[in-house]
Length: 243
Image (cartoon, rainbow, N blue to C red; front, top):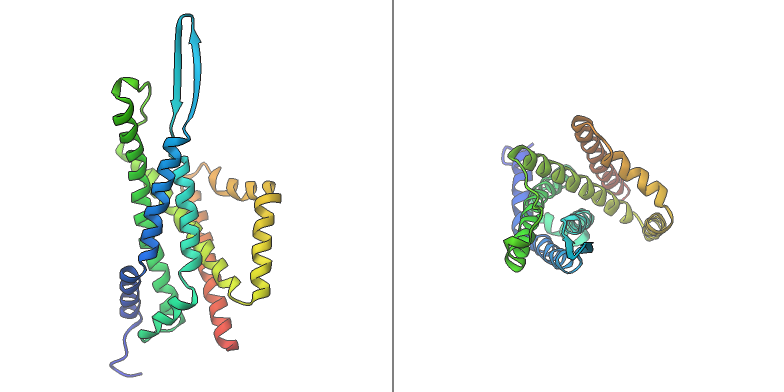
């Protein structure tokens, strides 16, 4: 081995910095997705009217569920697209291999998920500020608030969910690149699960979302993410051997 050959750590750091500076579409799509979700939240807030004698009360409910859903979808598709062909070709400017390339992709996804985590929480606060400014403080009956520990817990859980979804997207992205036939099968299966597999999808969601223990939840997410990233790496290595 040449003394001038770069170490794995330095290669991963350089590739991660390059991805951070060049993959602007991931940041742009995050901003667009969250702006759209804020608009949907403001325009589609649930409401109801109650009457108490001569008093009529109109109640409007606004939550961050829409922002959460859209950001989760963004994380999945970011993982799905990060290792597409043009990005792999761009990595060739570095002295790289499958290990460093995948590690750099994982580092980038972790970093971009941290950004998504912060902006998601900020978007939730933005909705409150907009409603507060538009309706006025006298229109609020209940304004939810978080303690520091609760906010940190929310941030951590959001980050874990984003990491889980981006790792699943990353694995699926590697699978669909095996062949056109596999791509069709994966897409068909995905559509079938969405429209016909409500019970199975519900079981998968419940496996993570219904976990009452924080430790077990973290363990489930980390193990699942590790397996998803590992599957993507194994597929890439197998494809490299065949080629």
